[in-house]
View 1: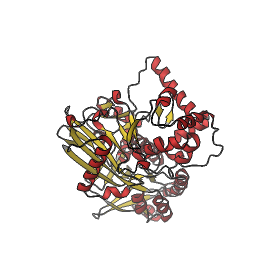
View 2: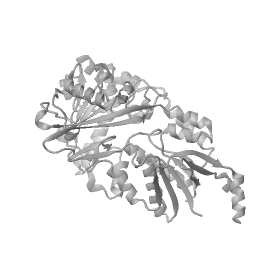
View 3: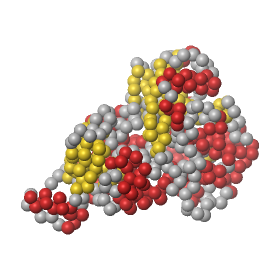
View 4: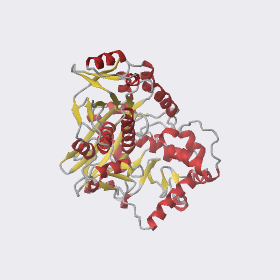
Length: 494
């Protein structure tokens, strides 16, 4: 009998799970029936690309990291290699706003870790005492305890307060919309924890990694990819291509799930007897589920994959186990918005010699950063125009995303005037609000997931995947979807 798999959520995690299920089942000559349910009228989740004339605008994420290879690997398997787009690395600079001025982040600073001494010494961003403190990281002993700590505690301990204020904090606010005082370093930046453990120093660890990359390059293995990668026609090309390649998955949009309930073993036994099937005790251990939709439909499932936000999953699992729902509801979320503005190039007097800038909270600004999109990537605007994308909201200024459109645009225009000197009117503007879209990995996140996994083991056939749990980037969501698919097929003995 063909096994029925229901996936709830049509974002990249749910799509990656479906594609991986099909891929592996086909490779092993197995057959699966997959139904993917999405409550909105489009798939892709937070990945949203809009084309306006010759402008290509990303409403959600605009890239993925090449050092986390799962997105690139998926694109290659989907036949999308020619669509992969590198950054324009002649503009590979990032700026930090400090005391109202934009200062270049020193070359060689990688994710807040300095790996080159001379650019750091020449930097106007970091004070002399701050530079000395960052350099002292080489001599700071590693932490003896394995207890989790906040990013603030970690960075302050290893690199000092100035590195936290001017580099680490604006980075996590701009990328993850999180508060470094509550963010779990073990869950959000596990590589840093591993470096400290392995090398005793972040600087030593990062230099060793760079040396390995240079040695690979000296052997003629020139890196094919830049640190940040995207797709020529926008990131929405990825979920769209996955859908085109799915063969045995039925995708149903505008299908909101009301509840998921467990079917008792007695019901399964009764059904089997009616069909003259012999059912072993082991088979009875495998639960079945019914998925009830808002329109009155009910779907039967041997297994259910929740690729929905944790708070949505909590609501759906209330009828099965309240303690699981309580754990899921402890994962906090914050809201953000992106505002994209296009300008005529000859009306902008700022050189825009970089990928954009980040804004520390000490600056008391109303944006957390901006990407100079048309510098960072090609094919994003006409030659005579520039495209800038600003970030709003997050853990410190969440309420700003609820401004009406007019007030939000005026606010962003004032910010760009103050920071970049832009006084001209934009050619176009686009606002994308993402309410409760950014999960926050607070201290103890990893421990709570361990408890969650243990409780879920009591309900075979239920699986969780997505940004709420183990990595919110596109590539990490794809990896988690692939691992989830493996677990599902193993459970179903396929």
